[in-house]
Image (cartoon, rainbow, N blue to C red; front, side, top):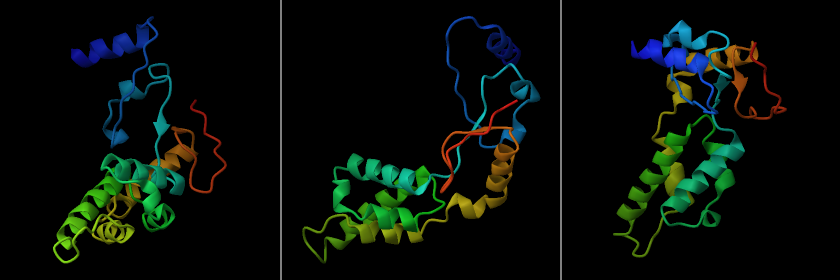
Length: 163
C-alpha cells in the first residue's frame, strides 16, 4: 500500500517539491516508477571525470585537515581513472593510515601523494567489478533512457533528452 500511495502522490502532487532518489540497479525498480509522467527526469551519473576526481580528492584531503595544494592532484586524478567517489575517499583514509604507520620510522611525517597512490593500488575499483553494468547504463543514456548528469570524459557536455 505504501508504494501505491507514494506513486499516487508523485503523480498528483501540486506542491513545488523536488523528489530525488537513487538506484544502483534500475532494472530492479518497479515499472510504475519508470512510467512517463511520474518522474520529471531520470539521470545517469557516470564515473567521475578527471576534474571531478581532482575535486573529490581535494574535498577528502581538506576534510582531514590537510591542504590539497600540498598534493599532486593531477597525478592522483590520472591514476584513479574509473574510481568512484567512495573509493577515492577510502584511498585518502588508507593513505592516512600508511602515513601514520611511517611516523615510527620518520617522526613528523604526514600524508603524501605517494601514500594515496599506494592506497589506490590496493583498491579494486567498481569499474573492474561492475564493468558490464556500467556499460549497459552508458548505452541506456546514449539511447535516451536517461539524461546525463555530468559531462563524459572528453565529451561535449550535451545531455540526452528523455522522452
